[in-house]
Amino acid sequence: MKKKEFAVIGLGRFGGSMVKALSEEGVEVLAIDTDEDKVNEYANVASHAVVGDATDEAVLRSLGIRNFDHVIVAIGDNIQASILTTLILKELGVQHITVKATNDYHEKVLSRIGADQIVHPERDMGKRIAHNIVSNNVLDYLELSDEHSIVEIVASKRLNGNSLIDLDIRAKYGINIVAIKRGRDIIVSPQADEGIRQGDILIVIGADKDIDRFEKNQVEE
Image 1 (cartoon, rainbow, N blue to C red):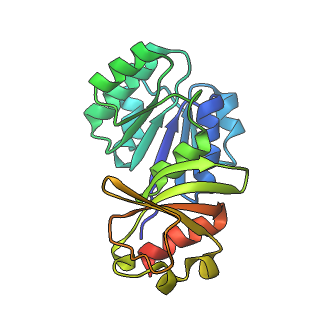
Image 2: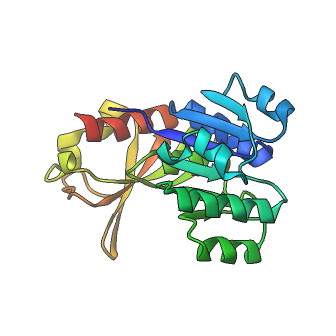
């Protein structure tokens, strides 16, 4: 399967953390900034790092930006540049655009011009956002420590009809399903004979590497 390709525009504190977190997720990352020093700083972290003005449509076209699966606009305090870049990305047909908002007004404008996801770095951790946008079946992610998290994962077709004891998730992966959301219902501390249905939301706790292994295997195997 082709690796997803991401681009991060703006390499300030938030943008830089996104480049690092996405790279750790093992995806292709293009880092873009007008500041050559910042680009050089992330040259060995990102798959590619370039100096460029994202408010220039010709620059974005030359980078083949429309071919990227997801573009994160992490431009700092320049709201005008952030909005203009988002508009150009929409016009170029980028599939999914996540934009950093600096205030409520900025968020309203971004929403109206079609940003797919708007984040406030002060409220959202870069690692959490990166994990959510890379995975198709992770709904939410709460970091407990550097290596442990609570994650909401959508149960795939492969899990449908199996009970927790059938799957033996704790023994195989070293993680625990602490609750199951099913529609409006939530089953807390589910019993071993509880069946899982496709589309259930599994609330899982454990080490990041083990959760990641479970998440990948329930789709791939």
